[in-house]
Image (cartoon, rainbow, N blue to C red; front, top):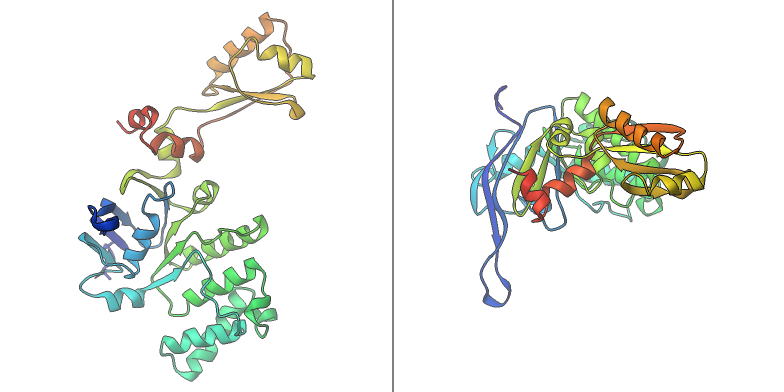
Length: 323
């Protein structure tokens, strides 16, 4: 692969499926464009049914595109699928682990499928067991593993062949917060080592923490793409959080300013606002004029939740944001 060529290049990708009972074809992807630079992480976000997994299946040659150009590690997925498969590692939504085998046996099996020599099988297995913190459980059957340990083993299996591009399809679904963070650390290590990652996820904080760029898929096309900061700058939003000394003061504040959300247990509420000095000053002056004391003020700008809600769907808010 040339040094200037993207690790993943998608232009005009379309994918149709047969319609139910002889009906018209179901259009899942209708012109997707993506570019993923080598050594970076792209997060692919979108509502259920937006086509994220279909994109993953095309990138990994599990599905053949109906139209468009798709190149992975410099190879065309239609003309050279074998080279694409050799260059890609896939970790799907469900761990592809054989529960009857030990962790070590799962890795050895994958290494043999990659046609490594006996010496290479032993060396690569030992390397991955150590790297993914699996040495202590290497000779236990995988069915005894926790969800986080199974996911680590699954990710290790996807890296046996030293892929140039790693595709992670919702890799932390169903994991507890500690296990999710462990997977995040592994992802960061892969990037440091020079891997290119394409990540689909339903967790917006995951995309915010891990991705260099984010592509938002909706209706079979990419409706927005950029860094997390770029996308947040495209939508209106932001909140000012006010904390009050008691419940009575909190209730009175709701009669003076338009409150978005009230948290009685925390004696706080959220008000829409950008958080700039002028807005905060005017808000506090309105409350002060009504004799309402504010104990604490905090501000935040739009987050990826705001981006997701604003830029997906057919609501007027989404259409306005996309102009």
